[in-house]
Length: 288
Image 1 (cartoon, rainbow, N blue to C red):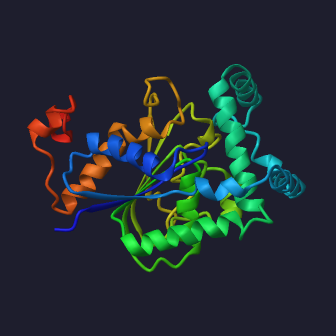
Image 2 (cartoon, rainbow, N blue to C red):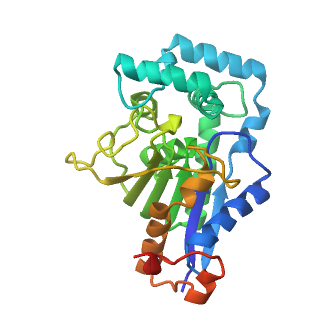
């Protein structure tokens, strides 16, 4: 039987070298997936940004500002009231993690939608790379974090994949932003995606102001096809509170259960109780 095929799409921030970063995701996944036979691939796009110069970034920011991109920068909790703005100001003032996430996410927006002067627009280069991965691997699951969720949605909306994806898992996603939807060119559920789980931490600024995306990306008849799940607290691999950590999201129970569901639907064998116990963790069956 073929292994469970998974494609990762990372998000914002500088990244370790591709092999090392891929190995970090694999190490986390294999602790909680409880499936013996997994074949993973990472859509690594951090290297595409290495050729971006300060001048290119300034040009992209200027072009974005001219076209109204500043609307995206007003990140705040899920309310447009004066209280929401006040809370947002206080959080950005006192929380360095939130300030860092906001700054880096805005940089990705500028480069992805407004970059010029690179060897091909960054957006087109990333989508072409994803198309090559998808057609070669034909994955059962795509797991996307942060700006990687925008890349995944952009791909399934604007590229002719020609296949069906059994499951899309997104976390820390800014897809609730109308501005992102406008620039991707759609605000509906993508064809060819059978199941979509979206996970968020309420304090993750990348998901503000609209953390739940089922209502933003409905099905053909207005159905809410995306399953939105809130996680109370996300921590990084070092145990520090980080509401945008890919590690914390990937290790969460909703993501774990979705991977396990897809694996069992494929008839793949779960790890034995002894193998799971070696990690010090319970299997989904034990936890139920």
